[in-house]
Image 1 (cartoon, rainbow, N blue to C red):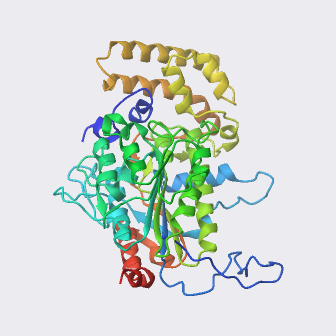
Image 2 (image 1 turned 90 degrees about the vertical axis):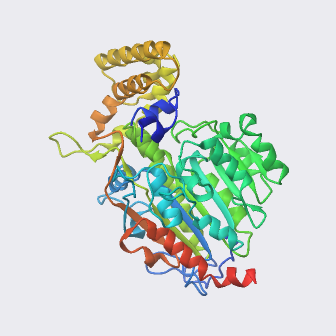
Image 3 (image 1 turned 120 degrees about the vertical axis):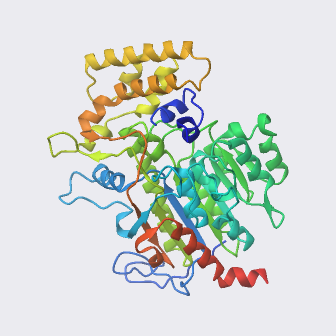
Length: 491
């Protein structure tokens, strides 16, 4: 599969990536000593729910796209309180259950992309890279979200990427090529289950695929009773149980670069939960920290830590929700790892996250600003918080000039020379922070190691040990198939 087929069209923004190669029942708590009416606290600090917790009625499935084990470890260093002797745990560590194998069923490649990886944990089937929930014969594969909707549950997809991107798409669309984003958006609207749209809450980026060029889909959703929102305030004020929220034309900005009016991943997750929990039959919600991967591809350690922080907050938010909702399962994992991130490089046994904390913008943001014609020195001064050598600034200026020359000569924005020049520019921009933090990288693509799986709630033990990525979907199908509440409500 070609480079462009994997990563989409190469525009100024996307070339940065392309170049890099269920309504719930509130829990009643017994009052414990010192806990007031908040609940009884277990020895591990968790609040203990009372009632039948054998099978989850609600599932929050979280995907840290590209979040390989080194990302989790690096984030532990990054989030650590330097004033404490011990290395502090992150929100994830306490809930580690095991690992996921990530290999696809591709005739040429044995390292997965997000489409094949997503299809595996959405449908329980291996497939080829680029596939959106179709098998190797291009036949549709039912997703756990579609099964949840068949059961009468509410459904949601939340992502920091375009909602038509591979990971959200695999839950509610079926196409043979992940680049068919117009068709994916059309399927979001046109394909229904029991006369209802498949996805009740759809939040992320990608407004370009829902406008007049693709059939005025935002207007059609609104006519069908959905709220349509484009900023954090409107999302907070949304009253309908169904909502389409598109907060960027393409991918949402990284958390470190985002304007104030943009909702964070945790904000979107909160909004989704407040709507989905109204359904007594339960819900399925997928929450994706998509730009962990989108920062890993161009080896942008500042962006990676920004997005890991956002995903960490969303994960803790989901855990807090599950602790107060007895039949909610939270699972967090990754589809693959990205970039070959190493924690330290060279001869020194040192990794310095403090340098990353001092950064004011991501490398991707600075690259995009310079690619748009902004003065390189101004961009670097506004974005960097550590020293930027003068000689390296000269290299950035040279790379910026080369990118402009290549872009001016290119027939269109798909010219691979634009991607190559963008890579050179971003590498030049990021070298000082990678050096200052002692961060190493081995590739601009994906890597094939197993990824961590974290889980909490009824059914969490099903994710113990080293399992296949397809087992995530198989477990959820099994949970929903045995969900007494949903089955009774269907009768």
